[in-house]
Length: 118
Length: 117
Image (cartoon, rainbow over all chains, first blue to last red; front, side):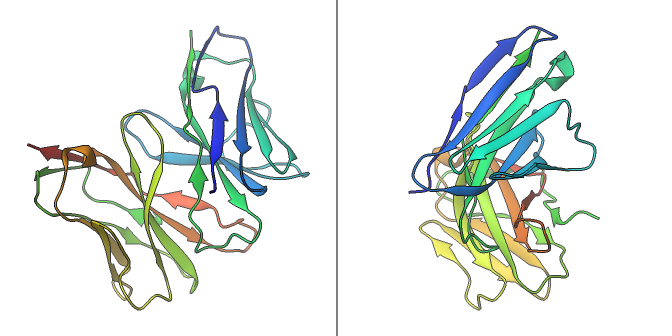
């Protein structure tokens, strides 16, 4: 149980274009989804938290207009990197909370998306 | 201040030996959870083991055990009988909450474990 699917696994795009990454919970309803970014050989940094049906909460320093997050249903959240630039190249990974999850529940992660902006 | 501190950027261990990966944490909450994740070079995050702040016994999952010392705020991961497939990045993480945080997971900087044959 608790499977999170993330697509695409890899994407290469040209500078100035936008890229959409999908995160789906396959066998549970994800009331909350978290989006992380990871640079090579570094830790996961939380970008934003999205709750179904409401606006995402962004961490300090994360540009809301650059990284658009939508959580329109209980099984799908999307991250759109708008007007991508080479410095946006990174590993993006999502995770999801089911209803009733608390501090003692492990987060389950998608397999991540490696974005390369040329 | 960092909430999760992993002081070992890299560790080496011989196959079949045990290894301890260090983790200390900082929180003022009474209720929190501590987690260890493994990240192989392919990138996926694999949940290994969990320890709750109210748990009196150390958690164990197969070859993984967690040495939880609450007063010292440490939650070290012990891997017994290391295997070549254990070579990966290991992250210690903590969930606190709520306080509007949705119980977000905060990670340490990680330890790169290399198992030598």
